[in-house]
Length: 415
Image (cartoon, rainbow, N blue to C red; front, top):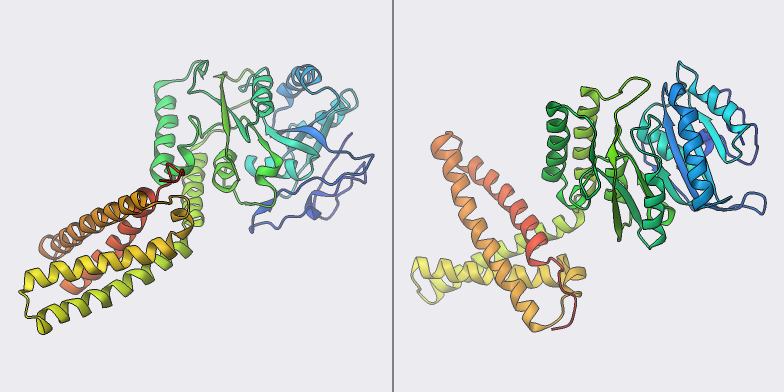
């Protein structure tokens, strides 16, 4: 089966049952969505759709297709498709894919003239696919085709996502320079710093060789930048069980490497955009409203203790602050983090959350004073500006650390 997408104005399909790429259920710049395949008797769903994004890979394509077809014919016979998505390569890779499709019936091809980029090419291929399992492999043979079998076995065991990794047993790189190893590890560490909850879920988040269940990303607005589609899948998909298999990254035999500094900048852009998108803004706003209520509680109790009962300044300030902390904890536990609290039932866990919350808030108070002194005494900032900056930073600190520490779900059994 051959599918050739020439351009938005002159798209022609050799098979009418596959929608032109521009009319698939996606809106550029608003996120590309994958939907469950609803096929007819003649267009039935398949077990696996493996996408091969290409650009100037004519010299590698035939060997890759042949090796993959032999493997997949044994693993999922007559129940898969291989889709080449080419970005209108000057070496006419798309043309060779069309020719090969006459010999390999499970091969389809898409030629894109109005879009560029590996990540969007993968998503466009997934949109046009019929597979219950969606996969991606590079066309340059740096991803050993034989590892496809191991990835499929992980999926068959129940994994939502199976990732080929250079950093687990059996993995590695064949002949990388010290500089290239440093850049690769540096990019991973950067990802861990910006998106620890996403990047830290796998040993090799830079991998472009994996399989994922269609249902895990169905309906999600995928909006990747550059080459690292796996981070987008991890960040936006409903991924519970992840399986990893080792592979040795091979050196390219044919063609030229496409890794440039532009790709590293796109990677950084992708991380930052995903960080902003995944930030729990609604929860943070609730946390801020609770914190504002705590200010009023603190002031009211302080006034009552000082003017009503005649307590000393220090004792009144400490007790009023503690009452405000207790007020904030109750509201956050019942409202801001209610979904997490319900998964940690029992007085012991409630009291444990309260102690953690207290500790974080007291640490925040120390941080607040330190920031004010740093900005005012060392940097010469206006004292009120310094105080506002300190409040903003400490509010974020209190929210994020409490989310990750006080209300972290690690034991969901009743206590």
